[in-house]
Length: 102
Image 1: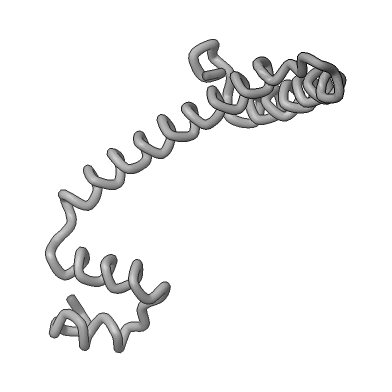
Image 2 (image 1 turned 60 degrees about the horizontal axis):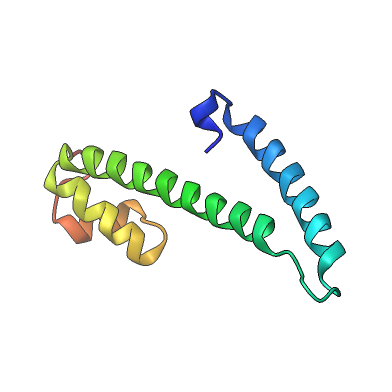
């Protein structure tokens, strides 16, 4: 969203927070009327959500590229860490059957 106009991460986060606050105030001002205006807040929220999805997809693609280059033992250790949260040296040796020096 904001990266398209050349803003770095901290800048668009600050800008996003300011915009969210401003749009929330606008929406809040119309909530108790007969025609509350949710459109600006919802558009901001949905665009922010879409940007988050794009960033996560890029992150997943980068991870896939990195994982594709790793040896099988490394992949086994990474999978174990995902399932258990941490891996000790003993866990890695038992899991892979590999040498401590591998």
